[in-house]
Amino acid sequence: FFLTMSSLTVYANEPSTRGKVVLHTSLGPLDVELWSKEAPLACRNFVQLGMEGYYDGCIFHRVIKDFMAQTGDPTGTGKGGECALAAEHKNERGEFKDETHQRIRFTHRGLLGMASSGPDTNKSQFFLTLDRCEWLDNKHTIFGKVTGNSIYNLNRFNEVEVGEHDRPTYPPRILRMEVLLEPFDDIVPRPSAVAPPPEPAAKKRRKGVKNLSLLSFGEQAANAEAQEAALPKKAIAAHDMLSDPTLSKEHAVDPEELAQKLRKKATATSFSAATSAALKASTAGTSAAEDGAAADSFEARMRQQLQRKAAAAAAAAGSSAAAADPSLSATRAQGSRSGGGGGGAREGVGGGGDD
Image 1 (cartoon, rainbow, N blue to C red):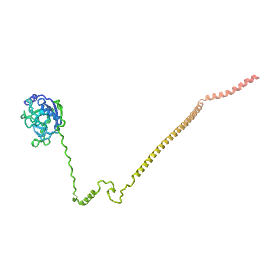
Image 2 (image 1 turned 90 degrees about the horizontal axis):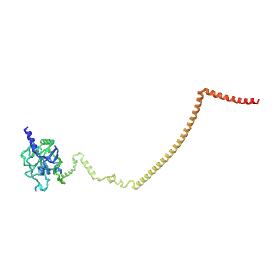
Image 3 (image 1 turned 120 degrees about the horizontal axis):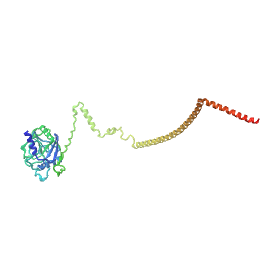
Image 4 (image 1 turned 30 degrees about the horizontal axis):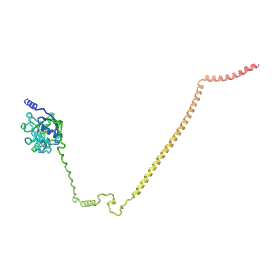
């Protein structure tokens, strides 16, 4: 309980931060908040180098378990580095002075401090604390701290395999730095702070020499290769490769004559195509006319057939009606007879008058 309260007191005594960046490393991201008010030179130098991509690809060349992990040297040797501050903020060796604060001390892990070889010899190298290290107080500038859940990624540095001189066998590296909140408004990245590494020269492959003497047929193979080497490099045809007098060096066909034949063939082909097109067009017109005439004669025949069918249907209808009503037939017959007698009566009435 006492240790917990002591840790809380340490964090509570630290001043507030201004500025935030993310260090994307091969072991995971690290969220870093900056004390830009308490250490303005270190924070300005750190942010400007990060914006220029100076730290991209830098390895952690020195890792001491439960102590610190050091980086910031593009050469990876621990002897390089550069200061990005203006001339008035650094000495003739390109180094800027230390910045210490009574409320910021090496009392817990996750602190960012400037690595230096003595007082006021800061450039670009910095380190991350993996535990508390109070013996460094007032000797190195503390300018930031790792915050949030990303602080758990610091434990992965303790698992790194380390060799001689505290150098990791497979060193972690900074992939890139992302500035989320700029603590200064006047930082302008320089055009090119880091020269691109020279591309390695392509190695020339040595041409192998065949030792044909090791083969049982080595002498024959050597003779065959010698004959092949004596031949012209650009061979086109047999008469170009051999010096046989029976092979002709002249063209078998006259080019002009061949071109003329091809032109005649093309003209004949186009004429036959035009003739075929005209014949197809005339055939199509004749067929259309014959189809029209056939259509007219067909309609006439159909009309005649319909008229005949109508007359036959009318006649059939009349005969069917007569057969269906016998009284009508008798009445018609009686009427016929009465008409004949009437004529005779009319004749007799007139004769009686004569009498």
